[in-house]
Length: 133
Image (tube, rainbow, N blue to C red; front, side, top):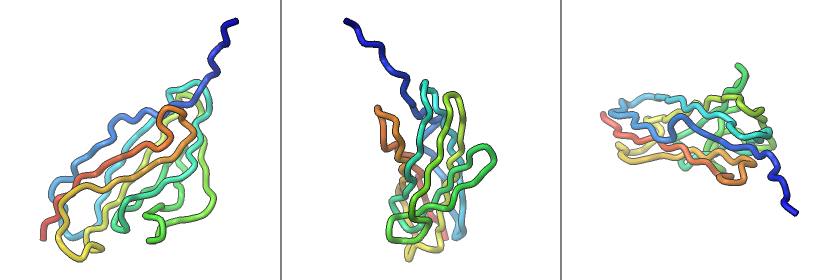
């Protein structure tokens, strides 16, 4: 007996890496876009960042989530969830706050989107930063 495969959600980003280039001592942002290209609703369960200098918010159907940050270092906490229907697209707006860093920073910061996608339950978005005075 062959069992039919159940439809599953699947997160697919248009790009997951972005180089912000030379970042002056200010707050800058970049928006990533992703789609649920699977066959079932995609539940976004948590958003978090790798550094207190980086925050992110999800924008779905014109509604913005709270701003999420590094666990224990600000940003929203607590229960929060969004659902993307099959074919639906959302935006992830990532903010980098250069003045929050004590020194000029060069490197990468990460934003993680935890979902119920069985193939990639923790999807990573990356921004590259080259701070300038």
